[in-house]
Amino acid sequence: MYDRADIYEAIYRGRGKDYAAESAVTVRAVLDRKPDATSLLDVACGTGSHLRYFSERFAHVEGVDLSDDMVRTARTKVPGVPIHQGDMRDLRLERSFSAVTCMFSSVGYLATTAELDAALRSFARHLTPGGVAVVEPWWSPDTFLPGYVAGNVVEVDGRTISRVSHTVRHDEHCVSRMEVHYVVAEPEHGIQHFTDTHVMTLFTREQYEHAFRAAGLSVEFVPYDQAGPGLFVGVLGADR
Image (spheres, rainbow, N blue to C red):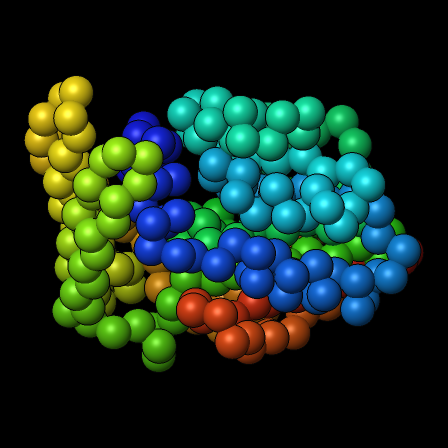
C-alpha cells in the first residue's frame, strides 16, 4: 500500500484511527521523561498523520519515510514540516532531536534482529543527550493472533473502499504474513481491485529491549489504551 498513499490515508481516516489520541500518549511519554523537549523526528512517518499533532506540541518537528509516495503525501498534509526520504536502519540527518518516534508498528517490517539493532542505533544517533525514543512495536509471538481476519468498508472523498485482510504466522521464520484485498469504487474510474502483502517480524519483548540497551538507551514497556500492542520508551544516557 506504500505506492498508494492516497488509499492508505483514506482507509485509516475512514476507519477512525485515532491519530490525535495516539499522538497525545506519545507526547506524554516524551515530556514525562524530558520536560524540556523541543524537537521531534518521526521515523516511518507515513502520510504525516501523527506529525500533524506532534507539530502542535514541539517547536520543531521533522519526518522521514522510505516510500516516495508517502513522503509526497506527508509534505502536502503537513506543509512547512521537513519530510525526508530515508531508511530507518541507517538515517544520516544533519541534526539531533529531543525525541525520535516510530509509530504504527513500522519496526515490524525489519527482517532480522540485526536490522532492529541497527534501527535503534540510528534512532539514538539522532537524539540529544537525555533524548527520548518511543517505538510502537508489532505484535510479539505471545500476542499475535494467527488466522486473524479484519474487514472494513468506508466512504471517503467520494470513494467507497473495502478492505479485507487475513494474517497467518510462519513459525519457521517467526513472521506474520498479512494478505490484504482492496476494492475501490469511484465515479470517474469505476471499480478497481488490488492486493497488498505485508510480511512483518514477530520480535520478542526481549529482542526489543536488547536493541534499546545496545543503542545506549534505557527501556521500559508502556501499555496503553489505544488499539495496538503498546509502546517501548527509552532515554539516551546524558554521557553519550
